Each structure stands twice: as structure tokens, then as C-alpha cells.
Image 1 (cartoon, rainbow over the protein chains, first blue to last red):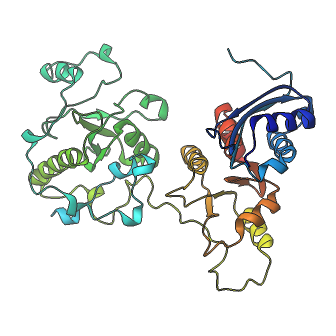
Image 2: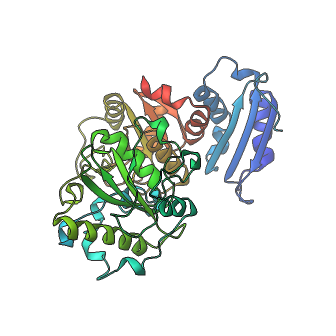
Image 3: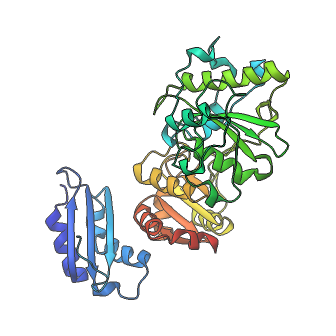
Length: 84
Length: 308
């Protein structure tokens, strides 16, 4: 059974308390490929690698079924700029 | 005669996906058309060139410094304007057309060193100017009349210039002689690294230790799906492209190579605590995967990383 966008969203929301979160299912429905943009307080003072690790860690269970997870943005709330 | 020649620029600037691997690149002479005359070539006469050509008796006004100042049209090598190559990369900006064509490189004594063809003449000249500045003092450029010309059009243009030079001088430009690799931008891409000699060989140390040694002994290592020459995953391809475009000297390891890197995928994921590939290590530390490398490249942070 594939992972849904909602699964990813709820998992990330509870784990990272993001101030902004956007999950895009890029798999065409099979649930194997997602793009994520996320802003969270927990990224404060962390390198990009560590931020990605937090996201990957939070999604550890789902990652077993996800083929491609693309973290487009992992920023702190103050760094978050809405797209023009 | 042709068997003693090879050509370089074309191969260097084929798009990544279509570039043949150096090893398999065939002897160029075998693919040459049996005959060609310059009149049969579809070669471009750009207006900028026509202006300068028809008024070659007087100085070309420098105000024509549009992007294609020096685009010569074909005809003959001897009739094409010789344009000095500016020293330093800034002067090269926009000096030569980023289009497909044939070009001849001249040294400081006005001797023809090399005739090459390229899908991006400006990039080829810039690469030569960087790698062999002393031999790259002036160039002649002849564009072919097609944004994406068939390879035979380019090779015909190349052949016509070369034949003209040989007819006039009785010799081959030194850079076109077999065995002269001066003008190859990428003489040989490095082979991919392998962790083990083969699956049948019993390892005396754990795979983790081999990984650990590998990433610590090599400054930049990319673990990718597929080989450096033919990445088998879009993310791996992008990472290889970014590293190459930054001129990074890096090692590649193919995590799909079950013969030589058996078990690497699972072991590496644990070693690096990172779930996906590609993975790029610099100085023994994981920098990240495709997303991180891409975003660092966009922000211009990569150069600093690789300078360390």
C-alpha cells in the first residue's frame, strides 16, 4: 500500500511542528515520490544536512515505501519566504 | 592521411547523455565521409561576418561588438579572419559565438596548432584558452548553418579546413596528430572506483571499513546509481553534472555494481545514516544528496566547499 500525501503531512506536522509545510505527490498517484517544502523552528542552528536528516528520520517508516523524496526547501520560519 | 588524424572539440562538448565514452570513441577517420567540397557544405554566413568580410580592406569598426563579432563563415580557412584570443576569462565573454562550427587555433608565432569542431565553439575555445593558454593566441571560427547540425556537417567542415591546410603546407596541425592529447578537454574521465575486486573475493575487513577508508582517502566521493559515464538515475546524473560543471576532481562509486560493490547500498545507508542515493562525501563527511548539492550549487556555496 502506497503512502499518501496526507500520511506524509501528518507525520511531519507531528514530528517537526512546521510553520510551513507543503507536500507534493510527484508520483502520479502511486505514492512513491514526493516533494517537500518545510519550515520549522527545529531547523534553527542546524546545517542543511541535519535538517534533511530530521525530515528523513521523521519519515523513517514511510521511507520504506517511498522511492524518491525530494526536499526542496528545509528552512527556519524566519528564512521562509512565500513564493512570489 | 586521414587515419593519422583525430578531432577533439566535438567530442568534448557533446551533451553529457550522448557523449560517447572515451574508450569507445571510434577512430574518427572511419566515420569521415569519403569526399566533400567546401561548396557542398551548409555553412553559415552571418551578417556580422559579411560586413567585415566585404569591407576587409578597412578596419572593422569595433562598434560591431555584438555577441557574434568574430563569426566567420566558411569558405576557406585562409580567407577567415584571425581573431586574437583575449587573455583571461573575462575577455572571452561573448567574444565568440556559442554555436556549432569549426575552429582553428593559432599559437603566438601565427602557426596553426589545431583544427577542431564543436557544438559550442565559444566553450571549446574558452576551455583551450584555460588549459593551454600559451598555444591559444588567436583563432579562426567558421560556423555551420544549423543550430543542431548533423555530425557529418561538422565533420565535413572540419575536413575541408584540414585538407586545405594540408594542401597548403603539406603537414598536419600538430594538435591533430594521433597521440597528441593537448586539445582534449577531458583526456579520460576517471574510471569508477570499486570497493572490492569481485564478488568471489572474500573480504578480510568489513565493508564499513572499506567505505570509511575510501571517503577519507579521497577528497570528494560521489556514490551514485550507475557509472559516471552513464548514471542510471536522474538524481545521480544531476549530481555528476553539477560536480563536473564545477570542475571538481571527484571519485565515483556505482552502488548498483553488484559484482564489485556487493552490499554497498545497505551498508552505506547505515554508515552515513542517509536513506537515499546519490551521496556526496567531501573530506570524509557526508555533504548530502541531490537536493542538498543542487541547492548549494544554486546558492553558490559549492565552490567554497570544494576549496577546503
